Amino acid sequence: MIDPQLLRENPDTIRRSQEARGASVELVDRALEADAARRTTLATFESLRAEQNAFGKTVASAPKEQKKELVAQAQQLAAKVKQAQADANAAEEEFGRTVGALANPIIDGVPAGGEEDFVTLREVGEVPSFDFEPRDHADLGELLGAIDIPRGTKVSGSRFYFLRGVGARLELALMNLALDRAMQQGFTPLITPTLVRPEVMQGTGFLGEHADEIYYLPADDLYLTGTSEVALAGYHSGEIIDVEAGPIRYAGWSTCYRREAGAAGKDNRGILRVHQFNKLEMFSYTRPDRAEEEHEALLSYQEGMLRDLGLAFRVIDVAAGDLGQSAARKFDIEAWVPTQGTYRELTSTSNCTTFQARRLDTRYRTESGKTAPVATLNGTLATTRWIVAILETHQQADGSVLVPEGLQPYLGGLDRFVPVA
Image 1: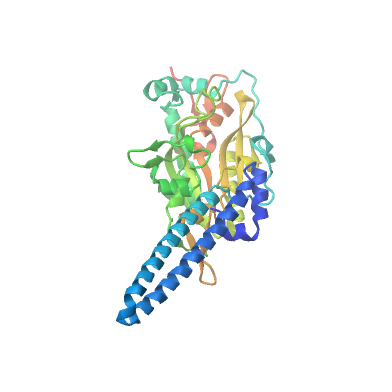
Image 2: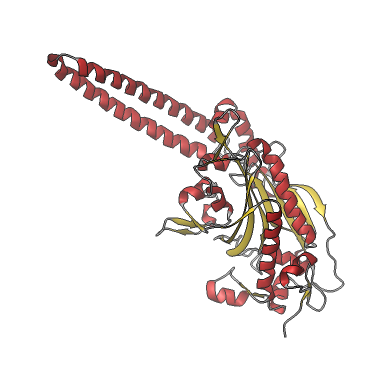
């Protein structure tokens, strides 16, 4: 949720953000009207309630012969108070719905526009070239006995797969390498629940325009998470935490689920877009004035991982219209996928400022002793999709794949995946 004070005092900031996102600017005016109605009805209710309390004392001290008439007046006043309270509650709910539909105001410098309007910040590494016809990751996975898509489809349907043999070992190696890197930077490991309550899913901003991508279990009123960010954001909900000495950092390891994995016919082949995958997610709680610094730190950890895996990649500043409701700024890292001849997203990191914390009531104590919402940030440090770029980038003419040096200790010293007989 956005800051109501910012809405009242500087609505133009929110209007500019909505416009840059390609979202409704009119919604800002509706939110202002709802806020005014909320405050008016609340003032009316509190005034009537004060009048009722004062009148109750008059009734109590009145002579017996006057009480019957006064009690009748008290009953009429009580009815007015009840109606005023109902009006105030309705206005509060309407304000919550309206302001809850507004996206997090973007940070200055975020490019305006949609998916194609990102700004490339840098390109890192040398795009691989081959003196043979490179295989795609699906063919390599089959050749190595690492990925079994036909049986995944047989068991679970389209966009499911089995990782087997060196494929399973590669994913575990990736996740453990990422976990070790995260712990070196002060992240506490967590294996998170993958089912969460609606208020947690709503609080993180995932039940907006992309709600149809989420698996929902109506019998239990629980959602399957598409990222451990959701559970990690809810971890300290309703709490006052201490971020004065520095950010509180968690590394959440979980299986993730997404219902809608791309448009029909797009990325159907292989494991680039699937319904189930594993991920190690960094999550930080910090003071709002330190959020941009923390965002750069998360990005640097991601870049360090991809460099050490020998991948060519670019870092982009995602345009406002492609941010999602919670993020005020997001950096994506896209790795080069040789057989597609383009960069594809492997990881992202988002600064959600105080948007999620306001919804989930996660606060810190300021120097004045008052409480205020913390800032939350997230970023992926390893996920199943990375296997795509690793296999394709490091493939050899004979179908074998060289193992990046940083992963070898996590694979028992194995330095090459070779085709199975």
